[in-house]
Image (tube, rainbow, N blue to C red; front, side, top):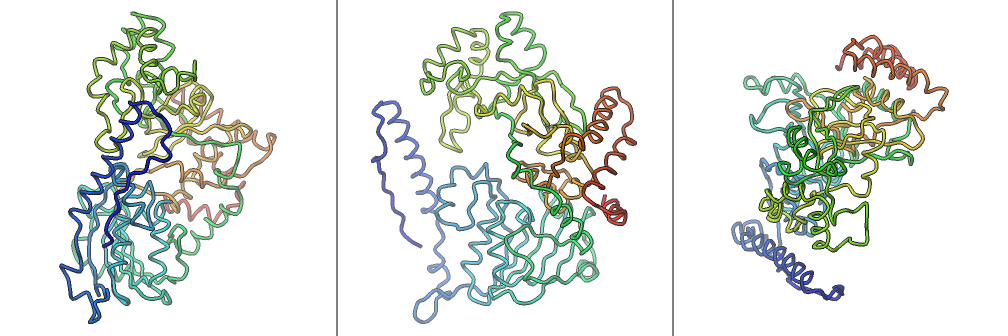
Amino acid sequence: MQPKQNNILFSDFEKSEKELLLVEIEKLEKELAIEDALFDDAFEWILEFPELLDNDLNWKGFSVIIGNPPYIDHKKLAKFSNFFAKRYKTYSSTGDISIYFFELGNDLLQNHGFLNYINTNKFFRTEYGKKCRDLLTKNQLHFIINFEQVPIFKEALVSSTIICNQKITNDFNFTFAEFAKEPAPEKNFNIEIQKRNKSFNGSNLNSRVWSFADDNVQKIKTIIESKGRPIKDIETIEIFRGVTTGFDDAFIIKQDTYDALISKDKKNKEIIKPLLKGKDIKKYFSKFDNLWLLYIPWHFPIQKDNSISGASLKAEKLLQSEYPVLFDHLNNFKHGLSNRNKAETGITYEWYSLQRCAASYIDCFDKDKLIWALTADKWGFTLDTEKHYLTSGGFLLVSKQISLKYILAILNSDLMKFYFSQIGVMTAGGAYTLKKATIERFPLIEINKKEQEAFINLVDKILVDKHNNIDTIKSEFELNKLIYKLYDIKDEEVQIIDNLK
């Protein structure tokens, strides 16, 4: 293990204010303390396993490694991010910790050694898993047993996989078996694996999303991708995430608190916004649950006077003088607000402001927009025309040129639901994880306004009927038929999609 270098450089630090200097020093001290803790507890392989060295004291490595890497979400790894970024080539700011165990295991293997893990399968399809997929496919895969929405671990919220990888050149086939949406196999496990085993050419896998679909399903996926452009490549479409309060009790209020705050000072309406959570968003409709958001950005009020940006004390006094009732409300939570996230990130937020205020795109909340939940038990996007704000459990899409209703028709279709099944990630409980990076990959066919009319007319009817609690099955069926035709999906291919529902 290389000795660490703890050097503090201030050459780029030009601001002389005492307060800012102390804050910067405190952040550096916290970072160094974290690294000290990591290295103080480091495991010295050479000391513990001298047999891993050859006669010339060169590193030889293990012949077999078996393990169950922990699953820790990237948000809980924030304070270690600098260490992971320096140590691991597979590092991603959104990656869970199990990714690094694959790289570490590979590093500790001798040539021809075997790496055997039971692990979350999220790296199969996520963007952060790209480097891990590349690492594994440079070696030889022997077998993968996938448990898609199967409760192997009762408390786990992610699907699992067993994978065997050998540190040799990838030049022959591997076997793949899958258990999907069923109870955990407790009996005759080996027999069940043999029944399900399929042979795959290992050279067909690389850093791209891993898919183990049969040829017919793969063909439909390829057709969809050939017909449209990924949403991320369409310059006139943008996708954003909702705001993060960091302390919901202070910033998210119910109707009775809203009424009380407004009755005391009508001016408070200016910065209290109607709010939707992810659970309030469904397919073609949303349900306002009488929740409201105190929208108070960093360096308040950012929309009115950017010249005060950076002057935290001035902003606090301005909030207190202009909105005294709201200030008093927030002051009741000052202790909790002042301490949020310090331990994990070392960041000190202005105590009265939102943790993440979406300032660069805040005007989008006041526009017509498409919205959806980050995690949803059922497939569903809808149109919002009521200027709702969203929590971080929701996303919004705005478009400068393409009709939102046309895009909504595509997103809500059975075809895109099928496409998600090939590129997206489900939770172990069967919920859709509709991240921005996933939705941005959906291929959208750009057609002119005249051609969009048939889609828009059906969406209009569905939106009205949903609002009036009228059944929309027939209209949605007709809309799906239009979309299949648009993407050139034949009847036999539609049957394959229907069978996968």
